[in-house]
Length: 383
Image (cartoon, rainbow, N blue to C red):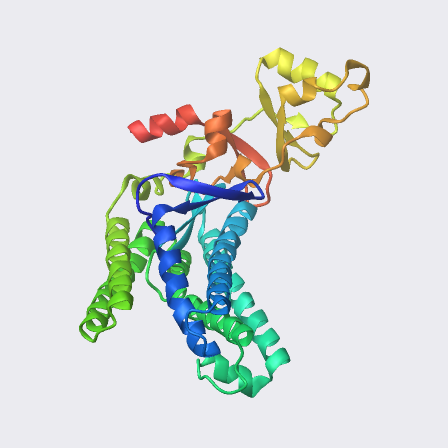
C-alpha cells in the first residue's frame, strides 16, 4: 500500500534490509502509548502510574515488532523467489516491504503474499500458548476478551492484548481487498486460473474497491457514533485501498508487456562458462577473449548456477588460479535469471538487469536457454 511522501528515518538493518519509519509512524506511536497508558492504568487500578506507562511502551514495541516481523515474512519470501527487497517502511497504517519488481508468476505471488499472514498467525499462536501456560485457559481468555478480573495482571493483559492485536491484524490482512495481502492472494489464484496477470489484477482490484467503500462507510458510521479516532483511521484506510485498487485496475504498459514473453526477444545462444573450469582458463578463454566483465556459469547438464564476475576471479592469486574452479567463486542469486515463458513485465525494475545489463533465461528445469539484454527490452518498450 502507498506510503505518505517525504523522507524516512533509518532505524537499523536486518539481513541487509533497511528498516525505516515514516514521520506518520511517530504520531501513531504517540497515540498508541497514550491510549494504552490509560488502559493499563485501569487494569492496575493505578491511573497515570509509571507501571502503566511502562506496560504501554512495551506493548507498543511489541505491536510494531509484530508488524515488522510480518513485513520481514514478505521480504524473505520475496528474496527466496528472486525479488529484491531493499527497505521495509513503517508508517501510520502499519508497514510495507518495498520490492524492486513484481512477481514473475502466480506461485511466487501467492508465496510472497501469504508469508506475512503466516508469520502473524505464528506470533498469535505463540502468545496464546504462553498466556495459557502461565495463567490458565480461563484467566487468559478473560484477559484476551479484555474482561478485568481479580486475577488479571498487567503482564498477562499485555500478552493477551498483543495476541488479540495480531489476531485482528491477521483477519484484516486476509480480507480480499487488493492491494492488501488477502487481495494479493486472490489475485494469485485468479492469475493461476486465467493465466493472465492483467485480468487477475482487475478482478482483485474490483474487490479492493468494494472493500474500500465498505471501510469508508463503516468508518463514517463509527464517527457518527462517537468513535472518532477509530472511524477516521478506518475511513482513511478505505480511501487508500480504494485509490490503490482503482490505479491497479487501469490498463497499463505492464499489462501490455505481459503478452510478450522473454523467449520472444532473447538471444538463444548465450556463451557460458563450465562450472568445473579453472580460473586461469576462464580468464584466458572467456574474459580476455570476449572482453566482457561477467559470464553465466552452468554445470554439465546445462543448469544455470550463477554469475562469474571478472573482478572476483582476478582477486585469486596467479599461482592458485589453475587449482581453483570457477564454481567456487560464482555469485548465486535467483534474480539473475528469468523463465523463458515469463512476460516482459517481470523484467521491469529488476536490479540485476540494471547491474549487468542482461538477465539469463532458463527453462522450467533451470537449464540456461538464452540471455535477454536491457537493449532488447528497450526495443520492445519502444515497439
